[in-house]
Image 1 (cartoon, rainbow, N blue to C red):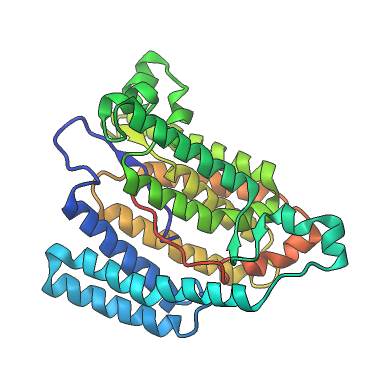
Image 2: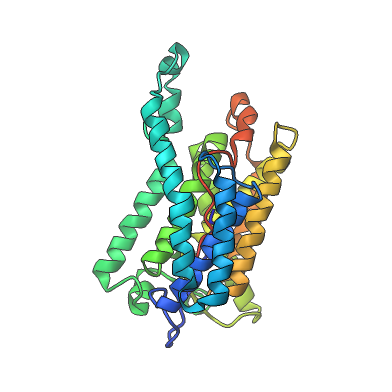
Length: 338
C-alpha cells in the first residue's frame, strides 16, 4: 500500500486533472515518502537486503528535493525510490527465482494448494484468482472508457456510471453506487488503485477464501458510495461526482483490521495490526494534503470493511496460523492516489 488509494472528485470545472504535471509531481513525492517510511518503520519488510537503509536515503533525498527543488521534487523522489528500492527488490526476486525452483511435496501435488493460492513461485509473484479477476475487470472498463470518449471526460464518466450524488438522491439511479467503483479518472488513478489491490488483496483472499473476499471488496465499495450519498443528503457536503476503486481498497484494509482483531491471539497478529494502522494514518494524511480526494468515501469503505472483517472466519486452521504472513516479504505497500 503505498497505502490505499482514493476516489477522485471530478468537478465539472477547470480543476486540474491527474495528467497535470504539478499534481503528478505531488503524488509521486507523497508516494515515495510514504512507502519509504513504511520500510523504515518496518511496517513492511522487503526481501532485498539493506532495504531499510536505502529507504532512509530515499526519505532524506525526498525532503531535500522538497526543500531545494519543489517543482520537480516528486520526480526526483520517484527516481530515487525506483533506483534504491524498486529495482533492487525486483533484481533480488529474480535472483532468488533463478536460484530456487519450487518443487511441491506430495501433499501439495495432491491438494493442488499452489494452484489454489494462485502463487507463481517461479517469479516470486503472488497472485490470487479473485484479485486477478478484479484487476482484469477494472482494466477492461478503463479500456471501455478510453473507447467511449476518454477516461477524463466528465460526460463519458457520467454516461458509464460515475457516482453522481444528485442523480442518486433525486433520480434514484442507485446502480451508480456500484458502477462508479469500476471507473477511473486517468491512467495514474487506476495504476495506484490496482497496485494497492495487488499488494493487499492476495494475502487476505488466502485467509478468508475467494468468495468472501469478493463480498468484502464489493460491499465495502458500496458502503463507501452510500456514505458519500448520505453525507450529501444531510447537506454536510456539496453534491459531487466520484469514481474509483479506492473505497473497495480501503474496505480491504478495514477487513484486515477486523479480521486481525477477531484473530488477535494468532502469531504476530498484533504486530500486523500496528502495521496496518500505520498504513491507515498515511492514507488519511494523503487525503488531507491532496486536493479532490474523498475522505468520506475512504472512511466509509474502511468502516464497512472493518465490520465485515469482524464477521468473516479464517478459511482453515492453517490459514489462521499463517496470519503472520501479512505485511511480510511480498512487496512494499503503496499509498493509493486519486
